[in-house]
Image (cartoon, rainbow, N blue to C red; front, side, top):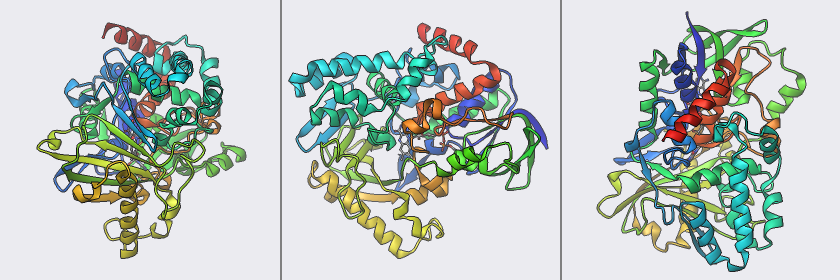
Length: 501
Ligand SMILES: Cc1cc2nc3c(=O)[nH]c(=O)nc-3n(C[C@H](O)[C@H](O)[C@H](O)COP(=O)(O)OP(=O)(O)OC[C@H]3O[C@@H](n4cnc5c(N)ncnc54)[C@H](O)[C@@H]3O)c2cc1C
């Protein structure tokens, strides 16, 4: 049995951020990870010789002085060569049946570009972007302003995106464009907290970057930094129980039977998993337990990882292929026999795109319930009907893209695919969801779970407790660790570093 200041469960970006921050502040830390490699959804993998990312396609606010850049720099894990700036003239390309819109970097350029597509909506576009920029300033762990007006940020998290957009514009196509990023985290526009949307849009417009060597590269840098600061990251250490004694977790037990103790235990696992591990949950109210049990998930994803020849795509762009620009229709749940409402295409930013070949992934929403009947089958040994179902889903994803990119399927040289069951296998996420729980106004802000819990030394962190995405999960750890080391001095240091960058 070994004792640490903090024991962190899970080595996704939130667990690694917690460990890097606490060890930077002199705390002894130990990270316990169930899988054989660290990184969680930052994990990259190779298929047919190409490098693919699971959940690290692009990130925002990555220019010097911007929040994610500053945070990674502060943690000592920023390496310029690990990132690649996306195309400033159009990093995201939105395809709608009526036409294609490229979103350039920077608010002024973005507003000008949108105004060229919607000339009568110039005022609405300006007001929308103004609101985004004003709103993000109220989030202390994003603006690094310890005196930020939290009542304003909480208000923004209780305001649905539709409630902001509909009074600004009646144009359904412009509304659809403003809602397009909801496809990223899988929350319908009427449920999406405007504050979350504002951070996603602000970060991407200001500093969109891809990973030049995959998410694994950032993971590796994190682990090296944690170890250099005296911490440890252990793989193949699935936590199976949190022993509760009185008000605290007294021991953390792994599948191998190892037992660890710590002053603080930080779990980056989903609340259903975290609270399910407690040996005694009598400190939790019945109401709280019911709420956790009933939390909806953000939805599963079906992904196709492919290599093609002769495809004229810029590796420094992402594509959003929408089947409709009707805002009421664009996030309606489609069946497996229908064309997906949206397919997100992200190109590999590695040198593997050289010589006319293109390496990319395609993602579409695919609920867990479609795959549930195979949940007890083993990864790598799933039956033929599962494989046939996946083939059907792959064909439908290609069909959605072919509307805009005729002949795509014929250009594919190699491809494999993954389902929510793959995510469940590698990550242990509930229902194999990519973005954790459903990040609606009901589950965010004042209504969010954590970061403190009724078990006094148990804190929670990660995408389930603040915001989804690498940036969101990472800044959630600032807030969580703030309960151990004090948030204000950390925010002051971050602010100063950002201003100096
Ligand atoms: C397909 C997909 C595409 C995405 N694209 C992007 C993108 O382009 N940009 C972006 O910013 N975000 C993206 N995301 C979201 C982003 O990857 C996640 O929000 C973020 O990585 C979550 O980090 P986390 O630390 O909260 O959780 P995770 O990364 O899920 O980490 C949790 C860790 O806990 C481990 N674990 C589970 N159970 C146990 C246990 N019992 N004991 C010990 N360890 C355990 C898991 O193995 C995992 O390593 C994407 C996600 C997916 C799935």
